Length: 381
Ligand SMILES: *Cc1c(COP(=O)(O)O)cnc(C)c1O
Image (cartoon, rainbow, N blue to C red):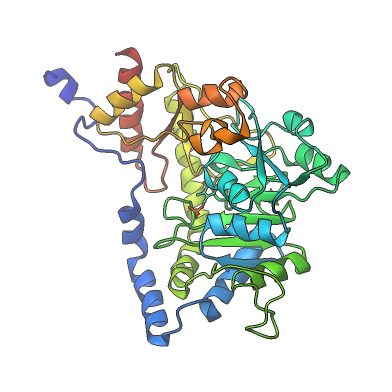
């Protein structure tokens, strides 16, 4: 590394994949006040903080009801429990997603039925959902991966014609839109996650179920506290779980929700900048379908020699990650389902080529230029 290279955009500049400290700095005072309010109240689970968050978030997601729960995973689990999914049932979902989408199905004794994805959006391919439906199909879970909604019109048409409920896994897609409709509002139930790396992240785990169906929302509300009867605690019509959302999380999330639109716009601006900066590089940038508002929980590119490129970026101080390195149908824990390598070629190829780059709201232009430079070097090196 001679003098020439040092003269370029901050050779020593580090660009992490996500910088939560930068975000916290901008809201520290508001958050500390909210936390103090909860500490002073000594009311720690559910209660007014959670109710207030539920109300604002239902509006934000264009839904009538919202039920705060302990995580995105528990939002999915509780949703499937509300739909009474169990042994002998099948649930259709993409093979290229975070583990939880399939894990909850297996935990209820039902069978995850995997489907391949679209090569450009990485979302479930509706054309392949059709042929995966059987008499045992009890739900379809489209995942709005990386912050872009799946092809919901096609999926809802298949589901409606056979009266199969749709549970949207919107963990990565809060505020994303499909033809003007918000993620989570299109199926029977929508599941959100407040895991710290999500666009609306708490100070730990948290999640939310959104719905327009009063009966299903009421069932979720009961299931999150062991299946209590709403009017009579300690009487149980069904077996629920301990899926409560903490008041501390809700208070922090209420503060952050006020900033979410600004942060989402910053992510979208950063994505546009990358699209321009990478125009001459041999990478495939994210493809957003017409009518979709993508919220870029991740900015994922496809690159040849992905692992070599990632090593070079790490050495250059650029944080990256691989979402996801192994499709779910090839996970050892699902070996008994009988899938094999080659069953879902589009997803399997994606696992070899995808690379997530930093796109968080506080990212600066200089940092983005640095990423582009390091990526250019990595591709030509
Ligand atoms: C994060 C995530 C989940 C799980 O959410 P947690 O809050 O971490 O339990 C589920 N599905 C997808 C697609 C996710 O990205």
